[in-house]
Image (cartoon, rainbow, N blue to C red; front, top):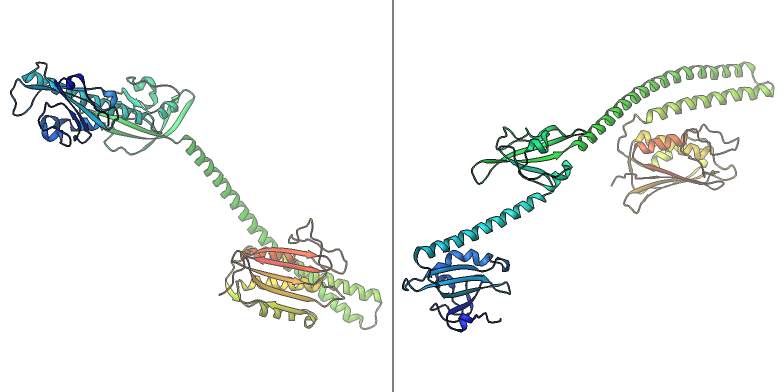
Length: 481
């Protein structure tokens, strides 16, 4: 560390002392104060310095020297007074204390001068604290301003000035700057809750704000008012728009629900009205067949067969439409289903069921609604049987396997005629994927399979190759442990 000396210290007319921020002597040159040597504490040796402990800690290079003239040390004659000069060391970590003989200022005048120095230092510190608070307040990212009890502005934040759209200088009256806010703070208690108000900022701008106004005592004992504002104009407009859309959606949903209920009632009535004449047609065809006996013309045999086939297909169509309409109303249950038992029982009921090779690799039961699962299994087996290849024995493989995501997938694969699904949705209602005349169908089987699967949370998928067969998969299948 470089020595801090002065001509007075070199001449023996002063003592130059380097202190750390705790008041301990780091270096000393000259001898004016007895015992004030390296390692000693200036506050213990010089009680007069005890009041300046905070000054030493806060002293900065820019403040310049602090002069304490005419100090009389305990145990010394009144005439032997010393002058103290305190300033920051160039390295910033220490303080330089210069002690020299007084220039003649003695007694009460010297004490008053010391007190004025102390007061001036405290005032400077207070001014710096006020400036720092003012800077922090102005740059706080909120809409706020402060005014006194007379309505004169004391301070505003930059955010508030930007919100107003023009500058606001201290000492302005609220009525002059923004009349719409002039009456907001009157009669405010010490803890005023937020209020929502409509405020006119300009002739063309009206804002909806949430406002909190608090009384804050100032240094004179009077009250200033701190007003914090939250502009909720856009937020309220967005909430109102959401409410309007929600109300419109609820109204549309209610109309749709009413329309669906009426359509459902109509479907049941129409189905009953359609099934009754179809039953009569089928019954009359049986009577005609019995009346004609065993000998008949070939065209009559074909006509009766066509009537029966058309009646059966019409009945199947009506029943399938009713089933499809009712799927959306069902609330699926969750029960353990053993796949091999369900598929085996349904396959045995098909014509020539004994000639179907059915294999099931299902290591555990699935959790599903039994009604919906039977509908899926019945339609899958019916499609496989209906669209089998005539020259190949029908083979059906059913497998339940884990997926990479931790779930389970159920697959149903046959070796039937298959189809070309490119550009088509096989699960669409009334979809016809085959063109052969002998492969008849009404196009609702896979549509019902999809709706039933989705009602239970399954994701259906299909892949098919003409002449090789079809695979239908269901993902997100829940299983029993």
